[in-house]
Structure formats: C-alpha cells, structure tokens
Image (tube, rainbow, N blue to C red; front, side, top):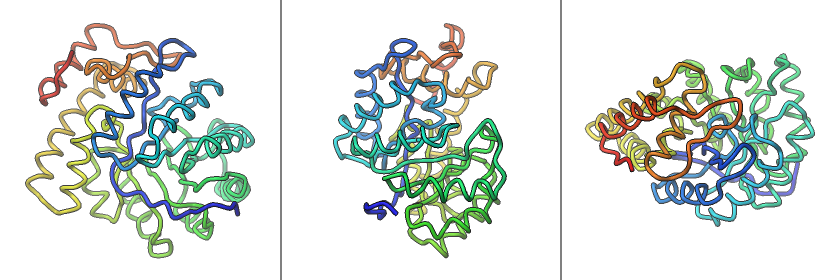
Length: 307
C-alpha cells in the first residue's frame, strides 16, 4: 500500500474531459485552459482526464503526459483531477500513474485491460498486482462496451478490501448492475459510485449513486450540476426541467453515422460555443458543415448561443 491519503470522495458531476487538439499530435493548450475554466466555473466536482471522451487510447504517450501536466497546472487545486491510466501494457499504466502523481493529480482511473479479454480471476489478480504500484487513490471503471470485459459484481466485492480503491465509475448503462454496485457501499461506505450514461442520472442517484461522469458537462456544465442538485434535493419540478434539457442535448449524439459520432459531436459543440477546436484524434475526422449545422441547431433549440 502506497503512502498517501485515500479519503477522496467524489459527489456531483465529473466531466470526462475532451482532449483539445490543434493537430494530430499537438495539444491545444489555450483551448484546454478555456475548457477547464468553463467546467470549473460551471460547478463541477472534479475533472476526469484521458477517459473515453478524452480519446485516451488514440493519443501518444508524450501528449498524454503533456495534457496531465498542463491540466493540473491550470486547475490549480480548484477541483480534484482524475487521470485515466488504462493501457494494454501493465507497466505503461504504472508509469502514467507515477507521472500523474508527480504532477499533483488526485486519483487514477483504471478500466479492465482491453484487446485481450481477461477472465475475472485474471482481472482480480491484475488489480491486486497493479494497485500497490499506483501512487494515487484508484477508481475502477466499468466500460464493457469498449473493453469487452465487465468488472463483475463478485469481482468488485472481492476487491473491496483494497483500501486504495475509492469507488467505481459504471458506463454499462445496465441499471440492475448499477444498483448491485451501489449495494457494495454497505461494505465500503466511503466508495464513490458514479454513472456514465448522462440521462440515467436520476435513476442512478435514486439507487444510491453519488453523481455522474457526464460527457455533456463539457458543453453545459451548469445544466448537469443543476440536475444533480435538483435530484439531491428531490425537487421534482427542477429535475424535470433540467433532465428535459439534457435529453434534448443528447440529440447531438445521433448526428453522424459512425461510433465516433459521440466524440465528434461533443467536440463540434465545444467549437461552436468558442471553447476549443473540433479536431478529433486519428483515425476520426471532424464533422463536415452539414453535421456541424445540425449540432448548432440542437444547441440553439435549448438556448445555447453558437458563435
């Protein structure tokens, strides 16, 4: 067990930050600063770098480190900074976590390793082996749609004795699984359990969840924070008002025809409101004008000004 505090508890909205790019392997530092200030001023409870929305597997290792270094500097302690350290290579995850810790990040986030699917026994051993080498509190991330492997509930139950693990982010979209996940808090009341699919936030919090890792909060953090607060205070009128806006916003994810459209749409929206450029990482292409116009129309329909 490493020598650090694991009392970080996350409750609220933690945007999985997009990675602003100027060119293929060039970070948009000015855009990153605008984006971080935008979400922090919007009231978020933390930021999550190098997740799915951040296109982490498509970014080079140098750029990942540059992103971490600049983000921690820009955030300057205003909110916790979580860093995705998932890699196909065990040691690369450790190296990135060490770098993030040296920069001053607050936690590491780890999915199941992808490409070669691991069995649950292998996965349990993997987390037990890697956790002592990661010098940060560790959040586990269930993303079976992309990694092909679940953190099964029994596996998480077995791993709940690891003090370093501070919670789980679930992007499966399976509410029965999420409810079972929340039941693990009877054994680990200190865990933060966060949901990925943003429109499920009310059901997730009703089940005992602590908030959401909501991609749309890159674009309209105030709305997601207001929705979280309304759910927390059980203000049904406000819940319906903010949830309606979130659901209308989600129409941007239906623009385009490829699986990459979620990232393209989010970056397109951010460029339309003047935060950062819309360039995605290779092999993806930015939206062309017809798709950008569709995104702009959706944003305007919910009261978001486009430049």
